[in-house]
Length: 235
Length: 264
Image (cartoon, rainbow over all chains, first blue to last red; front, side, top):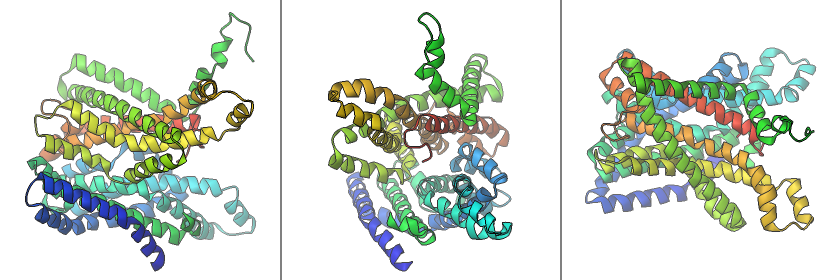
C-alpha cells in the first residue's frame, strides 16, 4: 500500500511543481509580496483539507453503501446533478446558525455521496447477472452478499470516480468557506477575499494551492483505488 | 424499409427521427427536455410579466441562461476543435494535446471564473467572462469528443470503406461526418451545465456577472448573505431544476448516441 501511495504521489510531483512554478511566475509578475502570498496560501491549505477530507471520505463511503442498497441511493443519485456543492452551501448558509460545521461538511459531502451512489448502483447492477448470481446460487446469504461482494464492488466503483468528485468538492469548499463566516477560514476564503480585493498575487497563489490540493487528492484517491481494487493498479 | 416516394414514411424511419426516439426513450432525458421547455416559457413569461419574487427569479434566469448558452456554445466549439485537431494530427500529437486536457478535467477549473471576475474588477464586461467560461468548459468536451472520435474511427464500416479504396475526402464526407454528428453533439452538450455552474458559482461569490446584471447566482448569493430564505428559494430551485434537466438530457444523449457505450 505504501509503495502504491508513494508511486501515485511521485507521479503527481511534476504537475505540482508546474502549478507552483506557474503560481510563482504570475504572482511575481503581479507585483511585490508574492513570497508572503504563497506562504499565506500554503498555511491556509490545512484548514481547507480538514473540510474536504472528511467530507470526501464520508460521502464516498455512505454513497457506495446507499448505491448498492438501491432505493434511497437511487433517488439520491437521481437528484445529485441538481445539487452542486456551492448551491447546497448557499442553502445551508441561511440556516447555519444551528450547526455550521456539520452543515458545511454536509454541503461538501452530499454531491460526492450522490455521485458515489450512482457509480456503486451501476457496479452492483453490472454484477447482478454474474458474480452476485453465482454467489446466490452457492447459497451465500443476503448479509454476506452485501458486505463481502456488493459493497466492495460499489466502493471500488465509487473510489474510481473520485477524480471528478475531488474538483467539485474543492469548489464546494471554497463556497462554504466564503459563505459560512469565520468558522471556516482556509485557502478558499483567502482566494475569494483576495479576488474581491483585486489582489492578484494572493488570489493566484491561493488558486494554485487549491489546484495543488486537488492534484494531491487525486493521486491519493488513485492509490486508494489501487489498494481496494487490484485491477486499478495496472492503470 | 422505406415506403414509396411521396409518402411520409421516410420521416418516420429517418435517422433524425430514430435519434429523437432513442433520446426520448431515456426517461430522464424526456423529463429534462420537458422541464427545459417549460423553463424557457416560464422565463419568457417572467420577463414579460415581471414583479414579485417569482417574476424576479424568472427574470434572473434570462441572464443566467443566455450567458450559459453563449459561453457553453463557445466552450463546446473550442472543445470539439481541440479533439478534432488532436485526432487529425496523429497519435503523437494527440497524446501531447489530450494529456493536458485530461489533467485539466481533474482541477477545480470553475474557480478560474471568480479569479477573472476579481482581476477584471467591477466594470468587467460580459464578453471576457464568457471567454473564460468557454475555456473552463472546453477541456471536458475535448476529452469526451476525442473518445467518441477514436471509437468511431475503429468501427468496422470505416475499415471496409478504406479497404474498398474510397478516397479520404469522400470517406470523411459520406461516412465519418454523418456518424460523428450525434456523438459529438452529446459531447458538446456537457459544456452547457458546466458553463451554467461556473457562472452561478462566480456570481454567488459576487465575482461573476457584472454589476447591474442579475443572474440566479447573484440572487442566491445576495439572499444567502442576507440570511433571507424566501428570496433564496426561487432562484435556488430554478437553478437546481435547470441543472437537473441539463444533466438528464446530457445523460440521455450519451446513452442514445455515444459510440463508446454511454457510461463514462
